[in-house]
Length: 434
Image 1 (spheres, one colour):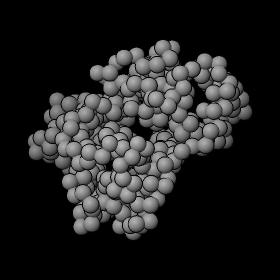
Image 2 (spheres, rainbow, N blue to C red):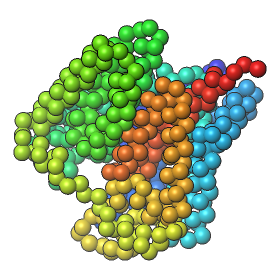
Image 3 (cartoon, rainbow, N blue to C red):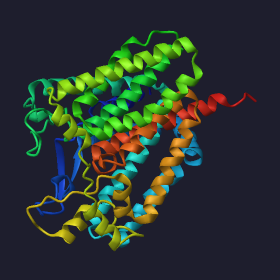
Image 4 (cartoon, one colour):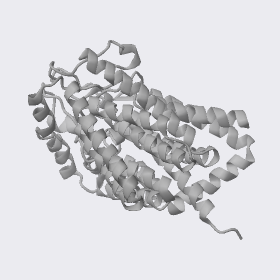
């Protein structure tokens, strides 16, 4: 049984390690040939993290048959998740997605999207069980290690002022609309914003690991250095959404720390925070190659949310939605073929409203809130991970990849599963002995 447990953990490490890599993908089915729809929305495919999830579930199925203790633990943790940590709302969302087959325009897309969601929900419960069984540390280290690698690749891309030519590893070419005077590093992801979101999550993992080492009486040197590299990677992406969301998640942590520590520690902490901000600012000028004009362009130009296309779909079916996975196909039908590329709204909440209607949006928002409430109630570690979840909820206001792009949906439920596992463990430890 120990071998199966180690293999399960290896699969979870792999999800965290490669969760940012958006391609290559295994094509399963082409559902549209409309050229002005992005290719990821007109095919059904499996990404590299999807394969790691399938391996995890296969190993877990074998262990469920052979290991009664693991089976009992999974049942106990799943009941706790459903009853106290928002799991019931995530299950209701799965049920609503399934019912959408009654009105979805393309049922193959709906079945695939719903099945993918259900698999990730099961993965999250398996992740929670493994977290409760083995602890947080190695899972966090796997995520941080993958993020450090991606940050270093981003540094090389910035130095090269362009892609490195690692196409077989998932690197993308420079976008036609990007300036040539500097380069927004995407790492091995499909977009700099995607990399920024991945590094944002890893930064909170580094904070959590540093806190854990400090509580155990060790100097948090390694997680602090790793966190600095990851923060530099976020700046290298020049992702405004990732930077703003990171700040939104860190703010409550900073306030809590300032209120709980003594005056001397508070002064040292604030000094370190100022130094970090100055270093990040100066590194931003290096990334932009000293171009002050592009600094203003990059950070003060209005954000394009591609609102209109998706809003027309919402107006057509505000209560039921188009059905899971069907948004871009409906947009393609509404707008027709042209030279203008069609994109979904860059906001997860509106994206879900368009696909799953007001009913689905309500279920999603309540599920997110119940998950957050459970994390914030689970001692200091839960609060730190809850602030990570806050940052993810904020980034969903400006980008859609945590729901719309499958590798990142995998990563989102990995984060949820890790948090669930810690919450169940913390609640069990806080109960008085009978």
